[in-house]
Image (tube, rainbow, N blue to C red; front, top):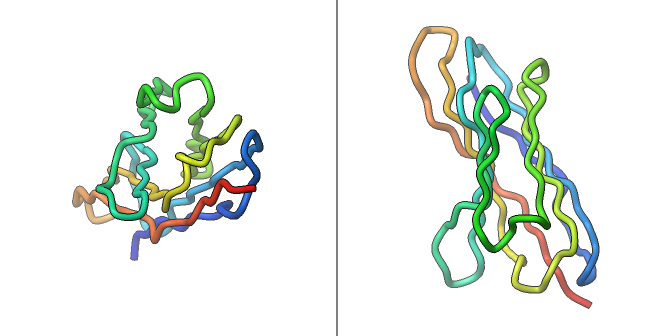
Length: 120
């Protein structure tokens, strides 16, 4: 069973920081692009940032400069460092990964979501 498990969400004041983590586990041969998406209350799921297997990042304009995506290929883990958080960053954050599993099947996986609340 290949799955993504997220951690690191919570309540933070405006201007604060949080770090999200997402680890892929199970029988995995390789992981291509990994990324983070978010869904605010009453809205659709939007791209936050992605990172390729060789470390090239891509950010939405709304988080560029404030957020940093990184990954540790040895641990099959992707991170999202979020700084200078704003109330409009409040959302459920979902991890996404494109995985070739041990049986050579391609799978696009989503994490269970972790809630980030930015409020004073």
